[in-house]
Every structure is written in C-alpha cells, then in structure tokens.
Amino acid sequence: MRNANFRDVAYFPKPVFPQRLSSAAKRQVKLHMLSLCLGILLKDIKALSHSGVNLVDPWGNNQFVVPMLFSYVGDEPEIKDLSCVKGPPSAFPCEFCMVFLEQLSNLSIAWPQRTESTHNLKLQEALAAQSVARRNEICSALSMHAVPSGLWGFNLSNSAILGGAYQCFSFEAMHNEDLGVFLYIVDTIKPYLEQYYGTAASVRMMVEINERMRQVPRATDFALPYCDGEYIPNHSRVQARELRNVMQVLPFLLDGLDDDLVEVAALYVMRYKLAFNKQVVPNITESTLIQIDETLAAFHEKIQSTLASHMPSEGQTIKYHKLSHITTWIKRLGDLKHIAAQFFEGRHHRSGRNAY
Image (cartoon, rainbow, N blue to C red; front, side, top):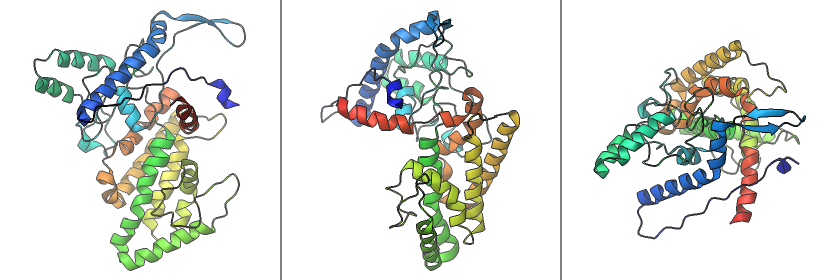
C-alpha cells in the first residue's frame, strides 16, 4: 500500500490561547511556535544539507547525498504560516515573488523573486528597531512577519533553481486549480449571465446547464457531482476529483448558451492539460512551455474581458496570480502532475485525528 511508504515523524502542538489575547498576538505566538517546532524537527537534515551524507541506494551502491528543501505542497494558509509572509491585503502577498497587491491579475510581468538572505537581513533590522512602529514599518517593506521561518537554514537555499524557503512552495493542482481558479469560473457564470441576458433568461440558462449535468452518465472511473441538485451555483458538496471531471464537460454544458463562456472553459481545459500532463513519461520541451504561455495568455485575455469583473477582487487573487509562475515551476520540477496534495491531505486527516 502507498501508506506503507510514509511515516509520521512529528505532530505539532495545538495552541490554546487566553481569551483576552488579541488575534494579532495569537498569530505571532502561533508563528513562533511553528518556527521553533520546525527548527527542532529539521535541525539534523539542515546540517546534512551542508555536510552531505553517504547513503546506500536500493541497488547497494554508496551515494553521497546532499538533502535540499526542493518542493513543499500545501494550501495558502499553511504556506503563509511556513514562509512567514503576509497574504492579502498586504502590499506583497505572494511568497514566491514581490508582486504588488494591485498587480495580482497582471500575468505578463516577471517580478523579483524572494530570497532567504533578503528576508533574514530585514528581520535582523526589524528586531533591532527601537520601537514597534519602526519594526512593523521594516517588515511591511517585504510583507513579512517579524518571525524567522522554520524552513530557513538549508544549504543553497537562495538558489532559484534548487528551491529554498520561498521557491520551494510548488504550484499544486488541487488547491490552486481545482478548488481555486476553476471555481472562480464556475462561481461567476451565474452573475455573468444575469448581467448580459437579464434575470429571467439567466434562470432558464442555469436550469439548462444543471439539466445537462444531470444527464451526463456517471461512469465508475469518471465521477461527476450529484445529479439531484444544482451544481451551479451550489458546489459546496463537490470534491476536487469531481471538479476535475466537470472541467472536461463544462464547455459542452455551456454550448449554445454563450460563445464567450464556452471559449473561456475550453481555453482553461487546454491550459490545464498542458500544465498537468497525464502521460506516463511526459515529453516536456521548450515548445511545450511556449505553448503553455501562449494558452495562458489567450485564457487571461478572454477571462479579463468576460468574467473578471465578477471574480473575487476582479481577479486580483493570489491563486490567479500563481498561474504566471507555472512554467517556472515546470522548469524546476518537471511534470506538475507529480505535485499533488490530495492523497497526502486525506492521510493527514486520518493520522492527525488519531494524534489529537
């Protein structure tokens, strides 16, 4: 079984706070506790990343291994806790780069990447500040908390190629796509139809979309959402694997109702399939990366002219912004289908429940 390949090594304590403690103070305590726990947990492997270690591989050969912080998968709140970077509405809400908050929907600019050394220097300056106001001002320059990340300290951690405490957070399909950008599209179909066709006509269109969904056969290996309710706009009981299947049929559900919506859905599927290649041995070339960028540009242009005004913050969201980093992560990690959190989160739910 796949579970046999993994072993739980630590459980982080669950903090209990005094009732009168402010939310900001609770946040600081939580981040400090997480940093200290990670420091203890990763102390030995960080040391080995500098010295290296001789290990025997499965074929009996001795190999000199240098462990690195290469890839970490998680959802946005967890990533923000681990990186000690502030999310929206801070000025620079991305833990990977220094994009401005008001430029999150601009996918055409390559922003400077964050580095551990820059954050460490700013933190030392902030901790040496004479007042809390000055400390907060210094931290705001990088939208960071005045807490050292527990992931700091690995060798070569400032290399954009090898990873590090900020480049390691990988673009992951379930959180960023299935439960992120794709749901932005689904959630904006109803208000978009109401704006362009009026309430009465949009109601008829929504009924038609959900009826088409109900009539799609539910094959054993092609799970779709329940057929006894309205998938749009109510997808609260739909799982990520079902959403991935809806992606494939959404252009057909919208066919004949609105050509712009059909094009948005089709471009999204094309871009998704290119980024998460399902071939056993995917052949990723420079032309593949160019094709991903071109499809993303076409999708971005279409969604900005149709659905963006109905999206959260008009598309100024961190998950939408991370689409601009896809080819960067593919160059580092290869095929992104291997970067998946769904299985591990399911296991974490069971093991975590047993621990607490």
